[in-house]
Amino acid sequence: MGKNKLRKFAEMKTFPCVFEYPWARLSREPFPLKGRWHQDFFHNDRPIVLELGCGRGEYTVQLAKADPEKNYIGIDVKGARIWSGAKEATALGLRNVAFLRGEIEQIDSFFAPGEVSEIWITFPDPQMKKTRRRLTSARFLKLYRRILVPGGTVHLKTDSPFLYTFTSRLVHENSLPLLAETSDLYSSGLADAVTSIKTHYEKQWLSRGKRIKLIEFTLPADGPLADPQEDDIEHDDYTSFPRGLAQCMPEQLAALND
Image 1: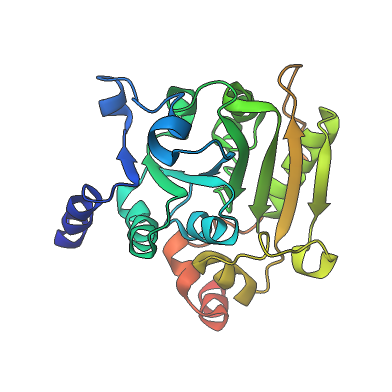
Image 2 (image 1 turned 60 degrees about the vertical axis):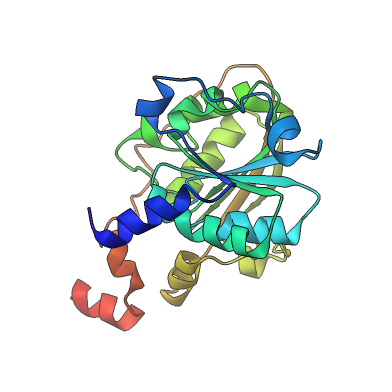
């Protein structure tokens, strides 16, 4: 492990807004804030909003700055990523932000039933070959509704046509109440101060000419959930390049593709 990562991990332990409970730790001890986030951390009864796979925490921090009337928690399994958002939130003195290092598959170990009001899923890996790992699959939606208030909201923001089409089908085929849906957010008239927040990676996707897609829906507390047919959904270029190469300029990427 590089010195930079070791420095970040050490500094993370000093941030009061960070909780590190990867699987190995969670298997040894229960998470102490489950069912107690309002009382023991935020010290208010405002709605709790999660960002899943928050990466560097940019969206989580910007959400918290844009809406101080809600509490925001960014979740990611990679501690070195969370460091950036946690450091900024700490420097800004934001009291409505927390970061949790843990696996999304174990989300109901961190939150009690009805403790969460909304979930944001921003630019996740579409997992085109692994439906079970797709964060908008029926498997994950069943997990989310264990912790959401009845009728809690799920927001998906993605650059992946595959993931957008899959999620749209799932929402419609399961008759989930739809709040918003667009395949081109910034040309739709639906963009607002919250959905227009642009992370480092979103700016790169836009520079490559990608259109940003948005789906927002509510999740009833019960009822069957099933994945839609996906064999006829065309795979997109999400995995054409390693994630790091997305930081190249569009013309460099074009040259690599020739």
